[in-house]
Length: 594
Image (cartoon, rainbow, N blue to C red; front, side):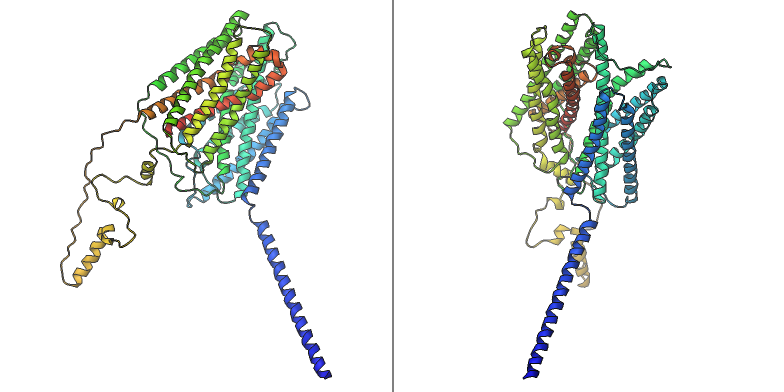
């Protein structure tokens, strides 16, 4: 009995040992599994959203550092000098140059691999326009070097190093945009996100720096003009030494007229690079990624004539305004009133054109194109976002006209111009966005053309044959293959072949000289797009080259004060300039889609 009890005890101990060993093995397996998952999570790239957030925060902080330096410099204090800002921007440019060099070399080493590309990321005409802006930026860098040579005794060496590095950056960046901006990055995604977003915010910071320099130059010119009219206690920033060459004034004036092109260059580059950043790791839909064919351009008469008329009148108004705005008070008021009359006429025609286009769309409803398109979505967001600058100036003008105690001859024309500016952007934004999102009527035909060459008329090809789900005549699908099979069978049976001999195929000549005229709707929409295109160029030229009645009419300054109103203009004017140039690009896209 005791032996039996001992046997039971030993059996229970064995069971306990087996259970404990199995528990230990299962726990060790769980620990190994957890360690493996942790190791994988640490070694793999971060998820896409986390990488976007991390890189976005990195770029935002770079921009805020630069803006902080700009605000400190704007106080004209001795604690923070402009050399600090230029040194910081130069460092960012050098980092971007290193990243672009690394990217281009790595792409060159992978030339045997077919890289995915987003055909909608940009177009050849946009890259051509950016190249032209880049050339003007290079001329501006040359003018900066010449300006430094004239004032080298009182300027820091950073003033000459910066334009040289900036010119190198411009050349390298244009090459990158031409050959790599459409790339869809699928390797080193986290690292590449930081590289692309660094380039985005470097160009944004260069845009902010250009805006600040242009605003300071215009404000100095404005203060000089007010001093000449009898105002006092207005600070004018000038170099603390004399120029040693004869071309200093030419270089200074040339910089003033080249700033707008440099500003637009950097903001457009940042937008294109942002689209590239959004495309990192993205899976491109082949059906979406087909390049749209340009439609034929016919019957363009009214739009170009009216647009060229608007452009010519704009140049005339600009010349008259710059010459006479510094004259006596009565001539100055007449000059400002002339600008508002011109602007009212221009905006009325633009509103009429936009409403006509929207009415055509209402009369012929088409479904919206809902395919994923980051560049088109960004265009829409930028149109709305950049409208804020003009709307802010316009509503401030409405408040100033309503509250002002003075009554110059242009008071109520200023009110009408401000209200029409608000309405015009409402209508133009709707027209552009609906044009970009409407499905094209010839979508099926376009897909057929993109997929391959169209079959000739009166020719029998497999693409014209219906598709069957049941029995398939393989000889009909591939006649040559069927004849080969039939020939082999007949040779085995001692029979002759019944297949025809191969001859050179002579395609039937088909008359294709008949062209279908575009519909009246397309004619009208194309003319509207061309007219609005020219009008937006005109409305960009005026403020870009010094025609800014918001500084000169005195109504807003009387209501808000010089400091507040100048701050509003320094914020809103660059955004309004970007809106006009971005509308030009969007309207050209509308013209191609119609």
